Length: 282
Image 1 (cartoon, rainbow, N blue to C red):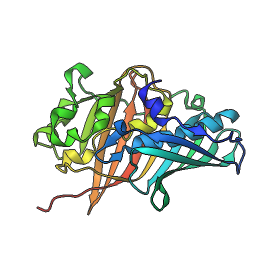
Image 2: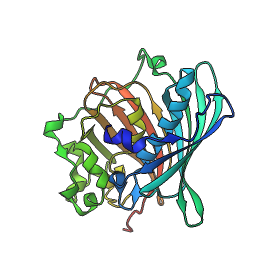
Image 3: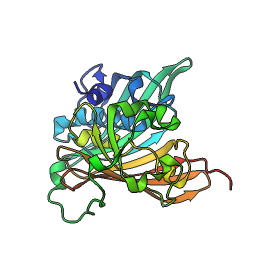
Image 4: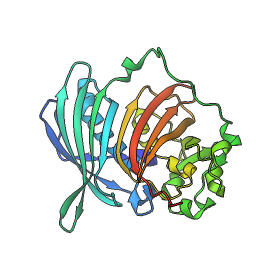
């Protein structure tokens, strides 16, 4: 099993019927190989939640996540995971479910992230009537690999061992102490074990990169408070191209937008998140 699929797999205590009001409990395990510092990457958590709901709702012909909103309540650690799912609505064209990811601590189960998503089929995402083209950037072999030994900050990103990330040289200045201050980072991404992209991977991909605040000269991590994402197509095999941008930083809050294109140049996912930042005093 590919590393990502193993990391996001859950085991259900019982079959959950795809009907409104149905609930179910599943269990999984968060592997330390997907950590950033002391916490598990938020994209892995979102993908675990959306994949669990997709598994249930596929029974009514709604296997693909179309949109989701995730509120991050506490940092997830490597270890056991409980998945609590409730089907909120089952419709002809789309169905909605909510998923709570919780982990045991000394005082009981602690909620890590609460995800509500709408699921359907990406057949409805055809044909493409209007969508932005991917940004112009060098091919992956002409870009800069993001490696764990490239900086003290990167050393703590254990998850980089699972990925092949190539950053656009035009947006890599932050890595050598010369951020552009434009608030833009572009990079290619594929899984290191050769797993091809699909719709289930996209909730992870939109949160798999270094935060765009790095390009503003803010090198610390930027914890996500809330993220809303949209899946707009099934990606073609090969590299994914992501562009992270920000035009809003107020106090210790940052809004980050992500857009993801596949190897055929099709926009396949978008997201917007509110994150915390620590902007140095001038």
